[in-house]
Each structure stands twice: as C-alpha cells, then as structure tokens.
Length: 398
Image 1: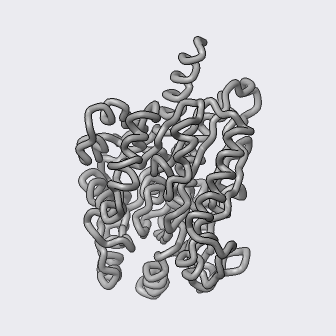
Image 2 (image 1 turned 180 degrees about the vertical axis):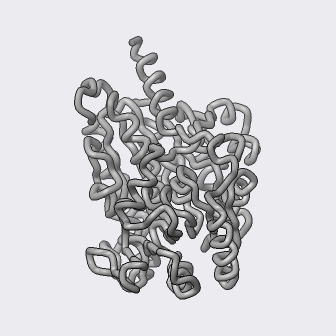
C-alpha cells in the first residue's frame, strides 16, 4: 500500500486461473489487485509458483495452491515429473476445493474476483460460488479460446447458471470497440445485462520512461531494439528459437529474448546470457519485461494479452506469431481484432518470420509506429477497482 493511503476497509479475494500455458492471467489480476489495494486488503490465491517475486504488488498477499501441473498426470508428464499426489482427478479437485473453502472461511472476503472460468477449471469453486456470502465478480479478457469446451467452462451448463444466479457482475477487461464480449457470444439477456466492458488492464507508462529504459539497457535513440518474448514460455519455444536465428540477419540491431519462466529451452543463469558483446541478451524471465515492451522499436510475441498491451504503451511495431493457430483461438482472434487499429502483423507460420522481420526493420528505420493505439482504452484496472468499490460500499450503506 502506498504511503499515506487510507486503511483498507474491505477484503478482496482473487482466484487466478492456473491451468493454461503462461502467467498472463496472474499478471492481469495482480494489476487489478494493485489498483484496489488502497481500499481493500487483497489476497491472491492460485497454483502459479511465480508471482510474489515480481508480479504481485507489495502490500498484496499471496497463497499458492498445489498446481494443476503437479496434480494432473498428463500435465506433470509434460514437465518430466511425477504427480505430487498419485490420486484420481476427483481427489485432486477435492484437495484444492478444501483449501479454497478454508481460505474463504478464514479470510471472510467482502468480494471474490474470479478469473476466466466461473466455477474454475474443474468446478473446484462451485461450493463457494453457490454458497459464499460475498459479492462475486468474473474477470474475463473478453476473447475466448473457441477450440476449448466453452459450453462447459463458461457459456453453458452449470457455469452459465452460476453467472446468472450467483455473480454480481461480469467485467470484460477489453475495449468494447476492439471486441464486444456480450455480442460476440450471444449470451442471454439476463447475463448480458451484468457485463461491463472496462477497457484493457494495462500498466501506465510515463512519456519519459521509454528513454530511461533504453538508456539503462545501453541503447541510444538512433539504435534499433527488438524485444522477443513468449509470455510464460510454455509452447513458445519454437518462436524463441526462430528469434535467436534472426540475430544474424542485421548485426546493427540489439535483441533481448525472454524465453519465459515456463519454457523448456536451456535456461540462462540468474543474469541474462550475453551474446555478441552484449548486443544480444537471453533471459529466462525478466522483471522489467513490461518496460522493455514499451521501450522497444519492434516486439515479437506469441500474442499474449499482457505482451500486446504493454507494447501498445510505447511506439513499437508488433509481429505476432501465436502458438495456437486456429482463427477461433484467443491469441489469433485478438491479434486480428487489434491489427485493425494498430501496426501489428499476425501470422501462424514461423517460417515466414525472417521476411516479416526484415520488412518490419525497414519500417522501423522510418520512425515509430503511427496508428490509433492512443485511442484505445487502457485504464481497465482503475475502472474495475472503482466498480467493485462502489458496489460494496453501496451495499454496506456507506
């Protein structure tokens, strides 16, 4: 909590989805928690084992659940591990459900903010959602992965019933002009009336911060800097290997390549691995990644929500090569929506990256990107914080 901030009067519990390939959900919810913590005591609970170190704001607390990666045999096998517990999925779900219920009972939140899936990946949240005495909010990035079982997870069955019967609001963390969550999925009227498009949840960047970040990295205003990142890193390995190959195409260009904490590529030591006299830096993870994205001239990304929005805080052009390749999947569909407004190229064929890179570098030499990014609403974290505060203070008659 910032110095001089008022004492928190309310309690907010955040349940963050950890069944995906990266850490974008945690980054988004942590930014919302940071915006709320002047008026709420914020507690984040998730299975992610990264977060407190450099994602969760100081002043927020964090509880780590046994991860799905260590409870589900197929997920554990991906990492070359044996499951933490050799039990059926039903027992693994019950373990997490019991811990969640204990935290809920002990913390006694005024509000529960649930990320992405109304009942959790395996309905582990169902008892709390149905019976928990607090206001409940679903936070969604808006665009969904349509190749997944959306009817079971979000848009039908028990999940849809919970949105209708138990949730106070659905907060779509996207600019409605880019993507309209309600209209795109044909939700029933009683659900649609609960939806508010809040704008993107993105970190604000002061105008002078770009120059400061570049100076700290040792890159002058006349040099070109490429930042390549795979978000959390899982399944982004082919793109990062392709980006390493780009470094020989133009030896005047500086590179920072961030593999991601969940990558299976060989991991540099605690400090970045410096190549070609420091022109190229390879990181496992980078606490300054948002700053790098906003200060670069060109960003190459798998298309994660946070990576795109962090880049749009600056002047960089974007090359987006999602590892999910179906047009109905979130990284591809979101990037295709965004490119109507910003200087962004999207392709699912990594073999075309060298040609895309050379064309983008030529464009970078003409100056920064000129597009409509400044018109996009990026203050979703503050908007969500205000909506939740207004709701809970009104309910308590304050």
